[in-house]
Amino acid sequence: MTPNELNVLLIQNADHVLQMLLPGGVVQGNDFVAGSVHGEAGLSLKAHLSGTHAGNWRDWATGEHGDLIDLWKSAKGLSSMAETLADVKSFLNIRETAPTFYGEPKRLVLPEKPKCHAIVRETTIWDWFTENRCIPETTLQCMKLAEDNGVIGFPYCHPSQAVPAQSPSGRTRA
Image 1 (cartoon, rainbow, N blue to C red):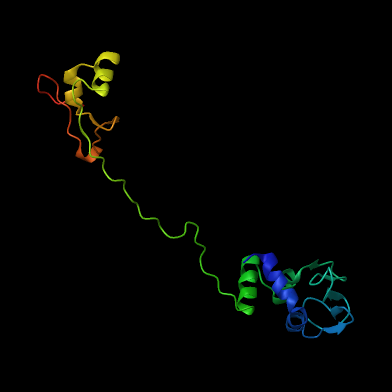
Image 2: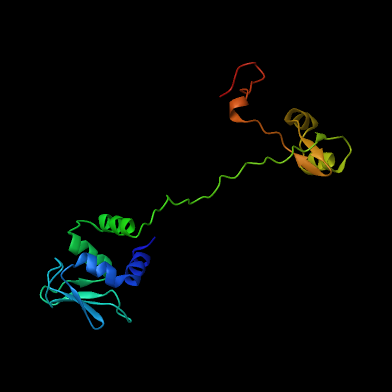
């Protein structure tokens, strides 16, 4: 919940909130007046109870001013805004859970493996490789290319399952 949203909730209960924060204060017309942020009786601090400026306050003696969250921080002597917002949420009985940015994890669904077969001689695909691309028959057989309804399949081996290539002399190549 944002500070603005919390402030709106405090404004909805402004007279109760101000009585709690400034116990020596009193209602005068559309304003709540007190001596200072320490809550003693007086006329120096004024907070608007309604209208377009509801929740705004100013201490005319010190120049301090702000919204009800700022008053909450000053009146309670809190050191940080995080501490203030936590205290306001506790007062308003708001319990927030950690935000979920990604939602539920998606299950990985692998596509069904195509039912390919080896490339057959004298087909369009065979001709494309051997005649148009000038790839020799031995290379096609070695690469174990496959096809399914005109779609070419290239084999894939995960690196953890790879077998090092060997040179014609039998030595392993890096």
